[in-house]
Length: 401
Image 1 (tube, rainbow, N blue to C red):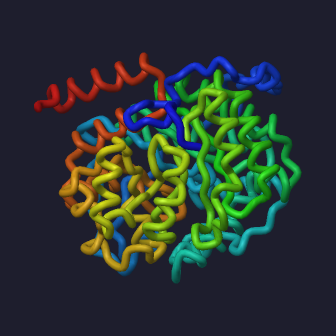
Image 2 (tube, rainbow, N blue to C red):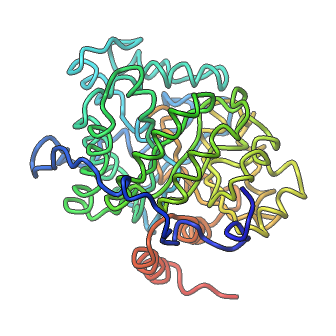
């Protein structure tokens, strides 16, 4: 897939491809958001203000005690790495499961939270599969976007890029693609209208699925490009990712449709996982922290201008990093690799965006640095990017050097 369009420094998502297939430009509109139908109207409860790692249900034990967020976060934030399904707090997850007739591994908040203490990455994936299947309707996706926009707003968020996994829900639960994409994009519209939060989204391919399923998902993503879908992700079990070239055609469909590519790589899969996906000239990497063990790879990421979307608490909770004191963020920063900060799955890890920014600051990534990496690493359009830069300059001062 190398060629003149993959030169370093070019932002493929900002291009308007002339060869985008006309048949992918139309989308089924489905139901639209009606104000007042189900979105939360109250601020996040005290649980969102955070507890320490020892008394949270987030599985962060094994790392240093995590910092408390203040009652009001004093600076703006951007989040580029958060899974929509992993934002649903236990109370709402239980309500959704009851509404949709889904049986969860636990039937109360305390027991469900206790399951969010992970032995290892495979155990986390097991819990992910057990809980995310509660989403069965388009309205579930819309509500999830709205609820998380409201929660993140309390932590100063200006812009969110969230991922979601439609392949699983379509093939396992029979949810039509239009219902899921309409739900997410209706939530995007409502989040801006009701809460003033800009949300964009990208579907995630699943490592190991048939190439035909990946290509189908990419086609649906392109159909919703003008409604807030900005990219294509790939994730799941990195250790079972197989030959990533199986997704080359899906990536090409997304590229030709004007979308960015931001795969998961370098979390549990090591340096090789990052090198495997560089064939796509990605616009960023979800995680990417394994690069800290390879100076040549870090130098290449710097040369490419690749922004990593790092989630400190998640890395400790899934045992990818043994202890927060050993997190590779400082090494990445020293090598000049730019890192934005996210929550990954805040409900499953018992964290918040405010907490992750504070933790990153302890690891040497200043709020200004994390914010500006988020601006530059986002897949938003130029108008949104300029607005975000102005917000950052007001909060942190104009960048120097």
